[in-house]
Image 1: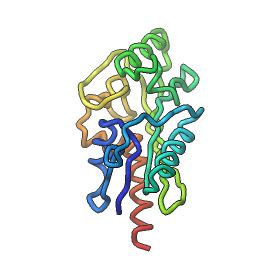
Image 2: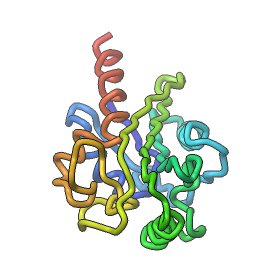
Image 3: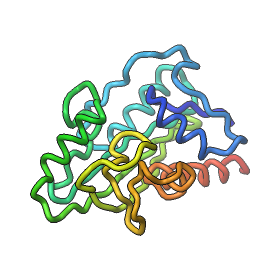
Image 4: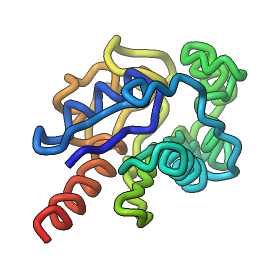
Length: 194
């Protein structure tokens, strides 16, 4: 079964490629000669993921999935949420995003946060969504060199390391994206048998 991942984010593609079994042929937007940015103007993670998947499906008529992910911080009433990638500006700079978040939380005792990923799938002209959530907390400083995005300042519940300190194999078993992708794989495996 061939699937296109509707994202220009190479880090996300590499992470997902490590999780998806070989029986699924994973393609990316460059395989379709599509190099533009897909607009992300929706007001929720769910709607952003849906828009991206539907946009690529309507343009290329391929089986496609897209993800949208947000970091929801309790002390900031769920921000940055749907605006996580552009929290510090439209340039999507991870270092600036983390610096802004750490600054906004500098006096906060409650550092509870969660990552939420929504995977939107369009396959055989039908639409599905899968959710992955991992709870944790925001550290007071950056730790680790693995991963991307907010990984150096997010510590998942049950661990003493940040996402950026954990081996990628561990992160790919417990992360929000892994949880959503595993639900996607389970669903695809079932429809592939029928």
